[in-house]
Length: 258
Image 1 (spheres, one colour):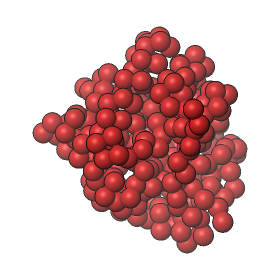
Image 2 (spheres, rainbow, N blue to C red; image 1 turned 30 degrees about the vertical axis):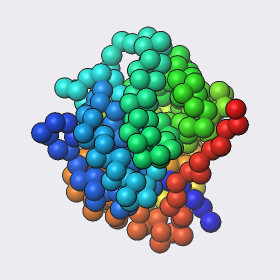
Image 3 (tube, rainbow, N blue to C red; image 1 turned 90 degrees about the vertical axis):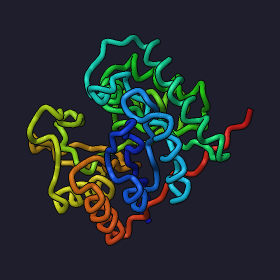
């Protein structure tokens, strides 16, 4: 049976501001990417999100981003590889503390927004992030855009690396996601999204906006928790996967001997 993980970016509320319906989304995903305070989230939100994920049997990972709360971490910053390394180590550490309270292991790390996009294309930034994850714990799974510089860096350093595809985003012929600045970046039609996801998981390919066939590996599917009708969208996608006999499951915990 074909297996795939389904993940969602969660814990992205901040203070008095609530973003997404994460308690409902957690019913349909197997992995939660928890914001660590740089692009979104705060200590209370992190604590609440960790508890909700544990209660729902969902595996937890760090979702480190750029230090840009106003721009939600989606604006490029001119950072060095060393700064990228430090940011990732710092944010993983913040989430690890909340997990330690519950004696819960961290499953993975997935960069957010602009940091994710930078790591997809910039070899040095990708290597810095992979090194940061490895140095914190080589047992962590690194999530990155399928066939990107980040997944290459993770595999080279020896991390279990998950090639990620997106349920609600369109693709370019080079395998990159369509920029959010473009009108056709997002897929809002549930049927269209499900068709794209099933093709990526079962056939290992996606049709780009240039109408070219792009080969890719699909280990984990991202369903954004902050989109319009996000809960209904998540339910439709997961139901569609199950109808295709695709097993939705998280990654096994990696034991690394020291």
